[in-house]
Length: 299
Image (cartoon, rainbow, N blue to C red; front, side):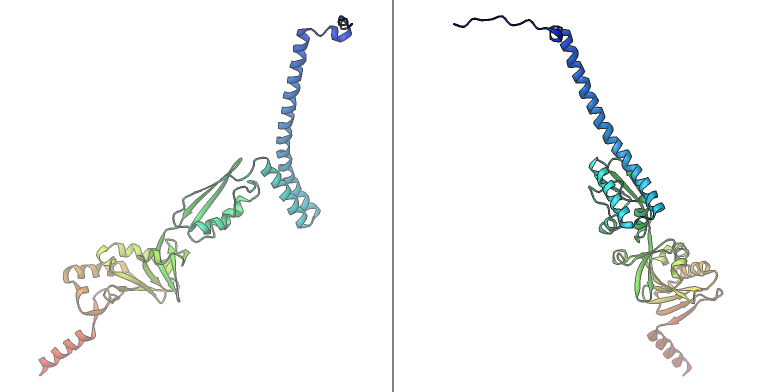
């Protein structure tokens, strides 16, 4: 036969484990967990700080101690991978100001991929690469931690097509070469010819714009002897401008066109180099007609 026995009365500390004590012990456990979480966060941010110090200190040490380049690169790669794993990785790349620049050319110049360590590239180096693209006049590269890269570019404005030997390239208002890639897409622009043509193009375009009716007729502007311009107009008429006071000669031609429609005549060349008079060269059929008329008058 079994008999139920009374449980023994707790002794020592167990006897003192009152409900209030048990609540206190639970609070201590929670406090320990909070301290542990704080410790882990501290370790994480400490790792980021250490990574930054390693970047600075490691670079200085490599320079001072003349360590082999591959060791320094390996160290930097490890540090960058650490920062990326801690959240400092490229998530978005925003481009501002791109209109003409080819997307693939820009991506190749940036050389930044989603997932790359955001501290793993030099903004200045990226800026230099982007500014080597023909359409880009200036660039600004900004990192916004933890994962945003902002690329702001200012593009050049194409004003003319420059023929240099057998090459056709776009140039901007400063005479800077943009490139040949998009020439066909900008075929409406004036064409300039001559080694020094780009640096004088804006001056020419401003002069042409003073007489819009004539400006629309200009197809090609040739730089003669690095001194003056000769213009090819629609209809195959060449206009020789003087070295000085070209704007006055251009205005004089506009007046003749309005009063006499000189560009509708059978002529191949108009010489404006003498400010006191306009000299024209007739087409061959017109010259033959005039010669025949003079011959008839003489007989």
